[in-house]
Image 1 (spheres, each protein chain N blue to C red):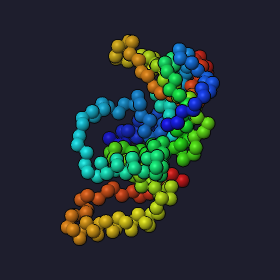
Image 2 (cartoon, rainbow over the protein chains, first blue to last red):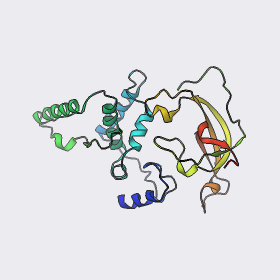
Image 3 (cartoon, chains in turn purple, green):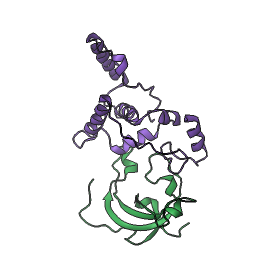
Image 4 (tube, rainbow over the protein chains, first blue to last red):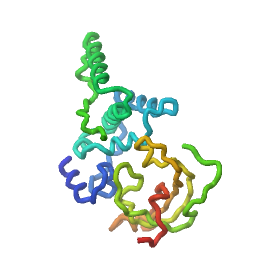
Length: 135
Length: 104
């Protein structure tokens, strides 16, 4: 599937990865589905960080970050995976925290989960290699 | 979004025929590819807003730019459109992506 989408975009005159209106991507999946807890948390974090009191980043910056993904990454990730990767990249870009601080926090949370016997590996948030971070 | 108290001159008025610019873009852009080069009619003026294409890079986005609602005919946009001949689409487009209709 990803390969097919890539070839569609290759002939589409330099569109951004998200700008696929009119390309032959097939029917849109309109089925509603329940949100996982982590997806609700990502939604809450985005709204809190983008709120008028925090202003860690604009909704437009969020869009810009998601639009900067590679075609492979864009097509292989679902809605809230795109969001959580954008959150991470924006918070690093805006120097709200450093990569080392984030890694340390993830290690702490993972250790706490394991200590409580909650099997953190199954609930892990998708990791990002950092390749999506804009210069 | 903030809206200025005064009403600064805008380039287009309701009823004007406009063309969505077909120039290439780099970075965050608010004019989708499938509409570039298409012509339509201004049906509403939403007001003036900070430029989202600059806000995306954490810049102030000033001066504010006018946002219009533009109505286009689906049969003009899609070759072999299979819906009703009178089907329309309305899109919100910022002034810096609009030209007078007929403009190259």
